[in-house]
Image (cartoon, rainbow, N blue to C red):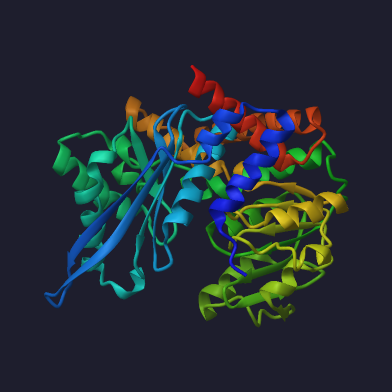
Length: 410
């Protein structure tokens, strides 16, 4: 069953808007991006032949500041996905309180099929056709699926060449030598842990010492989350990657799992752990479930079987609206993506700010600022959640919509 992410995003806003009786006209405006741009990108391949690729940029809303959001390279990129992600970026930036709107870009390509030189020509080609809609005070892209600091460096260089604008602030997620920020790599995972700490400290969910956590995913975000949660005294009992998962109710040594994955290319067959499927991982008898990989993994089909008391969404859009209804009925607390994984966009703002003001912060300074900002965002969402006696997702959407609508009026 295909779930359209853009329809999910709009349904989430609608539920919150109804509850808080938000301005109907402004909510309608928020359901539509300000604009989206589609470009053709001709690339000369290494064999001398030309191939034409299609690239998108969706600019959702800039009432609170420049459009902001990643660029993904993937064969399944489509307009609905890019529009939904730009919408979520507007809300995520508003929740975490950084002065940005939402944007998102993508190109339909399987980057694994390109050589490094083709990838560079391709990345620069996107900017050649898209540069008029970018700028440090208009639209600030960042890396996303299959893009990284190296690609942002090429894009920034191309942008500077074409426009003569030497500011490094047009792109974030750059390497340190290109003006990137310390702490960016850890930011999303750590941000999720700061939220987790608040839930534990405020006893929003009753978790005993050594409570068990299952994490779906083992990328950058999941590994930093796992390491930090372990330091807090929690037990990581399950992890997974695209090839399947591992489970040990006594706990998994995260460093050992990382080493095993590095040497074998997969998590499965880790000694002392049982191999399980990604599907099984979600339904384990654990206290905390952290979907940190794909969208739409918690659905009407499996929601009834979820045993966790707390779900922390580190992936974008892992829960469908139908599953949300089941979780609310069962009393499972869900911390939504637009709060839980906003550490990345928060640190993107810090990078942009450092570039705009020619300052450089240490990693300690960045993580300290990140912790303060995430904890404030959590307090603001919790405040709305209590005021309307509703879910954390509705609380987050109400908070974000109030902030964006306020800025639209101003």
